[in-house]
Image (cartoon, rainbow, N blue to C red; front, side, top):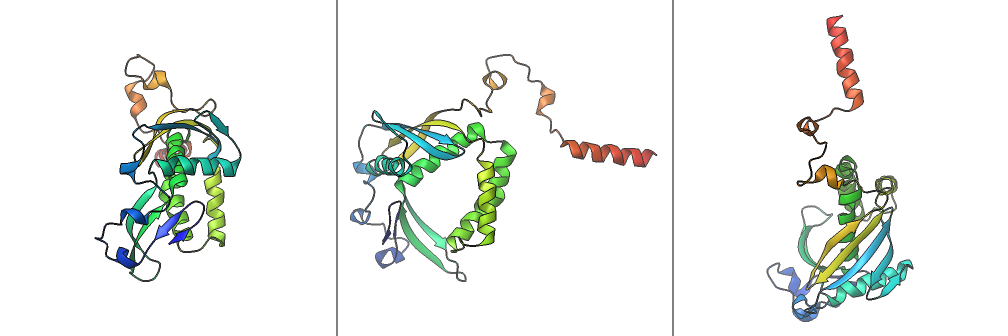
Length: 230
């Protein structure tokens, strides 16, 4: 076991057989989802530039960063949220290893963060981030490369991607699951209810569904046509 404030990992022993089910009494941080409360628990997380800055739950409002994280941890732990059991590839050669992990608070906050990105983050920015930055950032951290120039570079791009991730997400925990039940942004909302509505006749035309080229590509094509005809 390797335990800290945010996480506990379990490896070796009986877990080296990937077909062995982890015993119920192995897990230290989270309630077994089957034993979690029968009543869902709701909360609200506020984000500024992708960072959780306020947590509202059970009549409490928490803004101090450490206290906020510990409260998110407590909510997730008592509802059985944050367990995974995986076989993963090691850094050395073609080795694989089986590990079980608990990250209750981080799981809760990450799920709410991703949900808010759906409302506030530009589609192409999100695609670039997920296709290049997320994969490589995770790989560098997994392989112990935090103190490297490439990690520093990717961190700056992550921060840039989060400038518009401002708003709140209403979430719910229930028997091992955590999910969003609503989200809102007063400043960065990219969702237009009238444009997207299936009940309101708006200004959206069939031609709007076409792929629009980047302006510089249009200029390139125009100049190519000019040269060809010239």
